[in-house]
Length: 275
Image 1 (cartoon, helix red, strand yellow):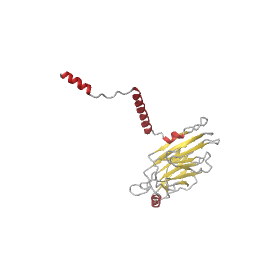
Image 2: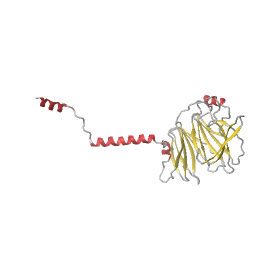
Image 3: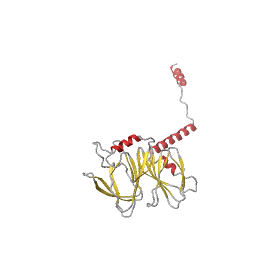
Image 4: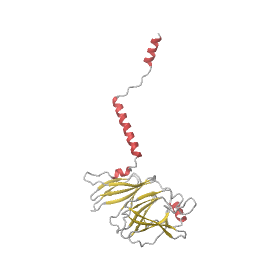
């Protein structure tokens, strides 16, 4: 009797459903897809750049892209398209695209701003390579409104124009270039950054750096030879408006000056400040 009861209890115990072979295959594929997506999200390869290199047609010449700098709020990409190239570009985030003049003696082309979700076609009908430095604003929203930016500028002890001219400005960013001819003849002007910013040197040149001396006048600190495409993103400046923890001008990445130290090459630097 005891044995019969055990057999009956075993028959009444619900068994887990047996997975169908096709269902198991689908589950395995979904798992692999999920792993691939997770790996892609951990990669530093920018998703918008992946779409930039896509060809519009098989006859188009492919473009080349390189990430110059990347941080939480900004990614800077060097975009190059050969003569005859054509590509459709999709912008996942707000993006400032700044064309680089092939001839350094020509005026710098005005940058163009694209909202998130926008798309446009890039066509290079010239005989030269088309190059753009693309500043992708990853935050999407400004950290400071215009009143907060103006308050930081008013509190600065040095000039807040960080270049030779403002090329573009909206509620998210401000684009400022440094463009000086060869010859080492320009005056030294110390400027103070009050916002986080990215910069890219184009063309390559020799640069002389300055900082305020004990008497407040510019003092030469060091020289550097910078290659084409040298760039970076500097963050943590806007929090104190270019001052250090003791309330003094931050004589590092916030307060300095630079001049062209080459007799033959132009100094060209594209900068974008984040608001």
